[in-house]
Image (tube, rainbow, N blue to C red):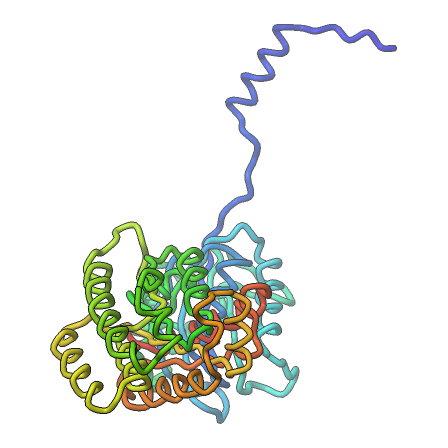
Length: 405
């Protein structure tokens, strides 16, 4: 066996060298990308591109406003275009490979040799640090950038003083000298670097649904995943609720009146206390559910009195930016109610659940100015199946990106 001899001096010299010369890390580079779409849900596709780039390519640092522009070089629908700044550890060739994969995953079908055509998404590398690259597959800076106003206009929003390493002109000068005079219109829409950032713009989301629809569970999941303040309905201690399910005619009015008072007190307490450490609020009820339930359970004269009191109490309430209604068919609702096992709910009739569903839809139709999002989740299990949960988040995202904040 070889005779190894420990040398204290060499040992300490080696450690001192390691302290002065830490391991070489992957170099972070700044790249500017142009993104566009003129097929399908253009805005949501651009937002999805940003999210995917943020998770697979590098950190998205800046996003420009979204611009609407005519198709360039061919006849087609108008484009939505934007530019983004990304910090990445990928090399230019690997970056190109990743971006082509993203285009394909979002439905881009390339038709080689046929010129320009409409596309679900288009991603171009404009700059990669100050590098100049000319290969068969990749040219950086992008050779057509100085000719395209729809690229230079959004690029000027996020990199006005970035100098073209070949032309030695910054973005503002390139835009002023650009001979492309195509109309370009700034839309009211923005792109966000993450879903959390997008949802935080909503400030307040109300999730509603019939008994057993899953609204509280969904509110919990969104609150946990996106750092939202939870505003949950408190009803377990209501003394009239078990009695109501035994004798609706006798206990409907005191039940609805007690809910009216409790919800008002809770809603004012919870929504007036802003939490600096939370991104937004998510609630498992909207206070207008009081009217929906009361209209189903109360006699006509009782409901008139109830509505008068409701209107007095809720004159200036905080309205949700998005009102989400989780629809489940009656059979699924009854199954959920049975599974969660609350004794006083086990005798709820299918007819009562159908009436509540109709009541919710009547309410939604009566407030078209409200941002109402109806999600049919009868065939989804967002608790056990992450894919189903992603479908719901995707629908909320698709709706939210079209709101101007």
